[in-house]
Image (cartoon, rainbow, N blue to C red; front, side):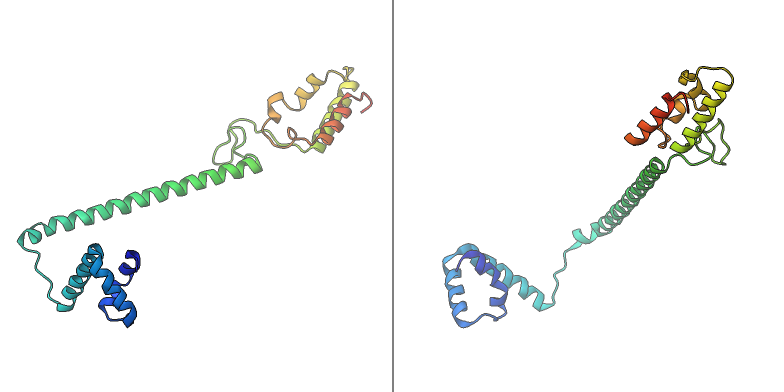
Length: 196
């Protein structure tokens, strides 16, 4: 038998739960291996102490410091519990903030909070309304037609576009600024066509 196998069988050997052949091999190994014999003896003494039901008194030194040790363990457990509670609260707050940020990036700013709006929904500065491509094209056509009716050159697109929406107003809205290549081409063709 190998030492690892013998150590696994110490408890069954002490309780008499191994067969005769294994017992003989086990005891031969204990006779030849001092380390395994020592482990078996320690296990036998521990079981003997448990069997007597006579727990030895640890003495006055142990009992004189028992109250202080107990208070220290209770305080350490409370500190761990507070630390875990604080850590859990910080983690929960971080998850909520990250979730709200992700939601806002997917949906765009809430109506009242856009462009510096307050919590009551009243905008402190005019908020920019996100337009769909079709709405933007309709506004652009109207502005170009007004410009032609007033005698302006329809190719002055920068001026006309600034009347519809300032240059930075479309950034970050997630609608007009994020066009598919087909929508971008159709919008560009419509802008440059003087008949539209």
